[in-house]
Image (cartoon, rainbow, N blue to C red; front, top):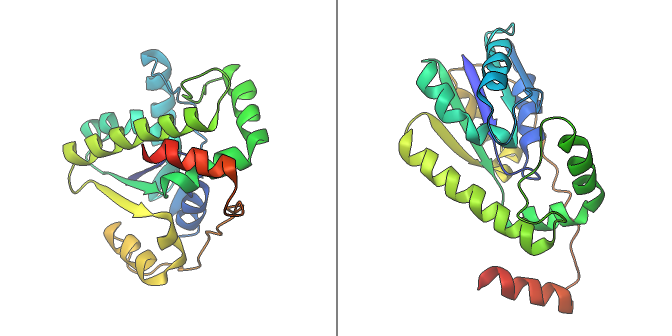
Length: 206
């Protein structure tokens, strides 16, 4: 089986990959396939060929960029399943912004290789990140409509619930699995009443 996981980033993709990779026969990585955010056909073919040739009963990768390729994979291979992991929009934006150093690292490192994260301004602001997340949500909805039954949508909080993890493994055809939970909510809460927070909240809900 080929297993693809995708989400915006800062939404539990790494935790999902860690949970899946502990299962017997699973070879699931996190952001290890060299796929560009804006697909380039020649690079895509070689990267996917290498990916599907990995050893394991279930080979997979979990990363934000798969949203551009999951449709191609489902059409090309019969044994593909996908997990769309998500988190509350405000929490995703706050997490990105609280880890500003990570944002800069992603931009400087990936611009020189294969990943310009799609902020809609060169220097990301909270508003730009929020607009980016909204665009990602629209693509998630489109994929869910095109491929019903092939994509499982999962809230990150379910990674802390053993019953939900058991259901996930059953959907993947795995009867006996390890149900150790992996996700820890590392959100840094901003005290209420902060004027900047109130301004941003107004922008998000408008």
